[in-house]
Image (cartoon, rainbow, N blue to C red; front, side, top):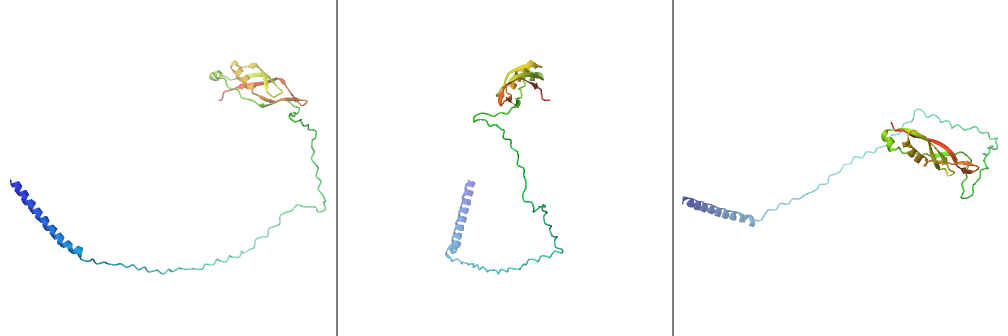
Amino acid sequence: MTRYLIAIVSGALVTSSLLFLMTFLIETGESAVTDPRERQLLDFVRVRQEEVVNREERKPEKPQKPETPPPDVPPPPTDDVNPDVTGISVRAPTINTSTSIAAPGELSYADGEYLPIVRVAPVYPNRALSRGLEGYVDLMFTVTDAGTVKDPVVTYTTSSLFNRAATQAVLKFKYKPRVVDGKPVEVPGVETRIRFQLEK
């Protein structure tokens, strides 16, 4: 029961204090709304500052005269030429006019022996490579009139494992054919040696 009485009394006090505070604010705030405000005007005046420029005339300095003049450069040397000579004798080069020209569509050959142009390295056989074998193969073949190789024959070999690889490599060789009387001819009995060596 006492609690209710205390709550009612405290509520009445808070309510009455709020009413008094509101009436005070209304009375004091009315003058702030109705009274004219004083306006203050700020006037900015920009004063132009006088610029002072310091101008100095700079004159280039007069170069000094060298104490001693540079020495005279001598004229370039000229070859001694005799003005009495009326001409120069030059011997004409000699030209060999005995060259034969082939007809259109034909090749012109000069007599000479066969010459190797392309030599293909053989492929190392896997079986010999796995065993670490080294050796060589001697072959005999015929160089045709077109410069190719035909009929290769193994004449000596250190191991039969190298024969096939050596024969295939020789068949890819290219030669300049032998020329006799201006015509290419076959050359039988050509010998070569194919070596098989491991890199160390």
